[in-house]
Image (tube, rainbow, N blue to C red; front, side, top):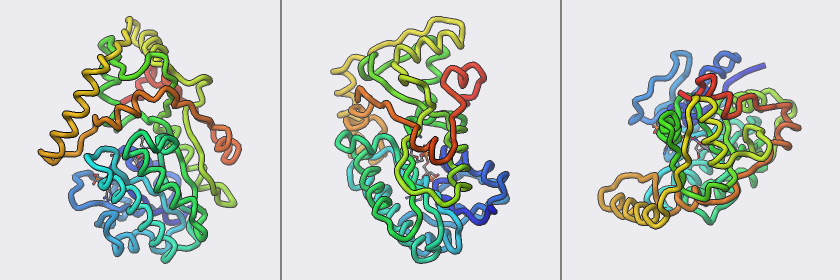
Length: 305
Ligand SMILES: NC(=O)c1ccc[n+]([C@@H]2O[C@H](COP(=O)([O-])OP(=O)(O)OC[C@H]3O[C@@H](n4cnc5c(N)ncnc54)[C@H](OP(=O)(O)O)[C@@H]3O)[C@@H](O)[C@H]2O)c1
């Protein structure tokens, strides 16, 4: 029977996509919401003001929860300490609060496939370090989801690139032959709903992607978009030296102007990584979950925005 689910990151892309499906499935959703957030959540959600630094707010969030889903995190930043404080410190504090207030709860950490390559970036290292804290958990039934790049309605990071496809352009930062994987947010939501229902609760670390055999290359993404939009889409390799310079300048400017940059040398190393293939086998076996939306279907059916 659905009960109370405590959710972080409900004002973001992935947490936001979870809200209504959780309510529809009968869960009573309690969400951590920062005072600075302008997002409006569905009226059925109980909002707990606070952030991941606030142990008292985390205690209120997880009190007597049946499940805790941790989607809050940062994907941009100008120093390692920022990623470690929010992504690692925040995850550890949430684990501690859950252990103290709801030791029988199941706990899901939304990590990232990037955690597989922690030397690439501060972000990837922080996701790996947070995973390690979750994997050490002894009291809660703790699960790590390692999704690949996620897209769909509400996404802000991949949207500019996906919009360019409509105009017949696909700028690429790495090798055109690099292998990558994708996951539509609706399929991720379906996996989370199955994770909530499965008995006994699932423990372990699981990769997720859309199940397309062999994944994608940038060339294949351009070809798929060309078919879906009925016009040629050109994959344009970006000048490598120019990109490296732009990422270093952006990081330097961010340090002086105090903004959180997306394009940094670390992000560029992630984008240039030649192998982001992954495997759904373990999660499919454990949950009976199968993704339904590949990139071609998403484009053809307008499931992007
Ligand atoms: N998007 C992807 O392609 C992707 C792929 C793999 C893994 N992931 C992981 O999935 C998680 C969610 O990603 P997303 O795309 O939904 O990110 P997002 O849209 O940037 O949302 C981030 C969420 O975290 C919250 N947050 C950030 N710092 C916080 C803090 N100190 N205290 C409390 N809340 C805080 C934000 O709240 P505000 O609204 O107040 O800013 C927002 O709700 C991240 O941990 C990311 O690593 C994402």
